[in-house]
Image 1 (tube, helix red, strand yellow):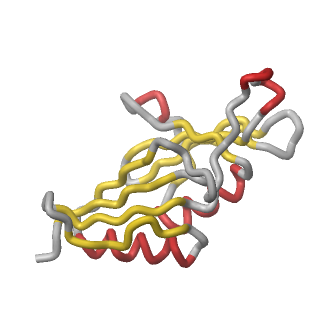
Image 2: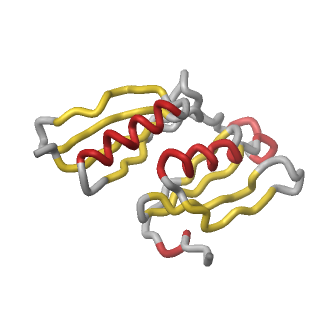
Length: 142
């Protein structure tokens, strides 16, 4: 598959402790498809990966503190979540519910269970095992 990461106008780039495990989690929970994977020189970490999730590209890598100097940003954890969230839109309310359940069963932590919201969406919020927040949204049940 060709690298599609340059075709998306905006793509989140996640820094993760355990990128290999994160990719497996995103495949299992969100149905991610790998577009690109480049191993680091140490053979243990991932230097860069691009995943197609729900029609959008999410890029990620392992944390490389040796390239950040004294101001290196630490990757988030479930206890200290990332301040930015990734939003996924689904065509049906059941997609929100089933994705949420898969995520929780795979080790994500619930922030907000699926519910019909006042703004007209079926919505849920969770934090993955790597500290990244996800907003799941679809039309309300009807």
